[in-house]
Image (cartoon, rainbow, N blue to C red):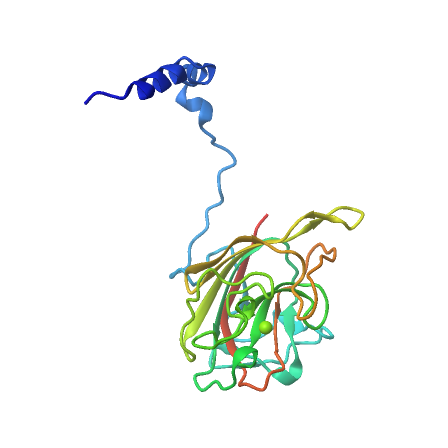
Length: 258
Ligand code: MG
């Protein structure tokens, strides 16, 4: 088949260009990188099981890695049957350890007999960085979003009041659900001004719902987001004050990114 004249002319122009000539003079080895060799990591038995370099934040046995977000006393949520259930009276809990950038896996379950509607139906949250007591920080919303209407930037998989999920892959109440998160913390200049925004990518039940979203600051119930300088911070789980039954978590692990 004859090639159109403009294609032949474009090809001739490219092969005559300095870029094309320098490419053909290069050897394959010149674009090979051999070091540093990526560390060997043994994957978990399943994709939801922790790989060998993960820090286990909850393994079904105890809440030793967690403290009260209010006063840093030992966490007083309820560990039973291998799961961690919110104790609303005890308030938010956060990790003893602090983190900057990381990969996080966490599983959560709305009670099968959940009641309430809108934001008052299985509300909780994963704060990617806890920057103070209460709800200070950056919240990835947890909520029953299976046939439960609310503002879309407040449904499950949203970055609270900043970014709705791309789609809604929520399971029915009673089923376990997963978040797999890549969190890049914000960076600040020595004078406290913002150097680079926080970024988040989230898979909800294996489905992409946040694609490298740049946060506008901390997530707030009332008002516009703003940044407050911090370096490293705990991960926090929310004990929401709504009257619906408390939700549960399990299999929580994190891989800090250097
Ligand atoms: Mg919440």
